[in-house]
Image (tube, rainbow, N blue to C red; front, side, top):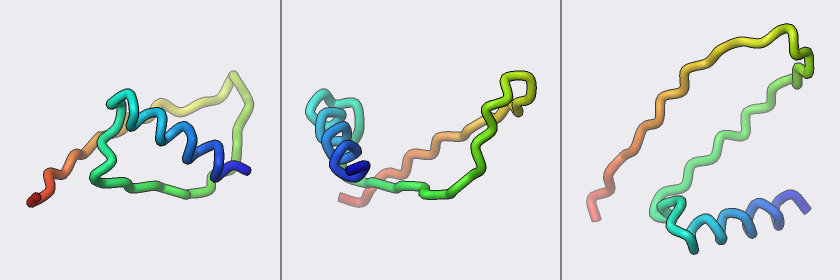
Length: 54
């Protein structure tokens, strides 16, 4: 079920030019959820875009 939802959202993102479909990388790292609003970590995320050769 999750896969069908993900594919639907991804196709819509492509349709509206929100993502570039030429390269797709998915990180499926599992992390334990932490719903405590009083404890959190700030994170800096670097976005890396690689240009293809054609």
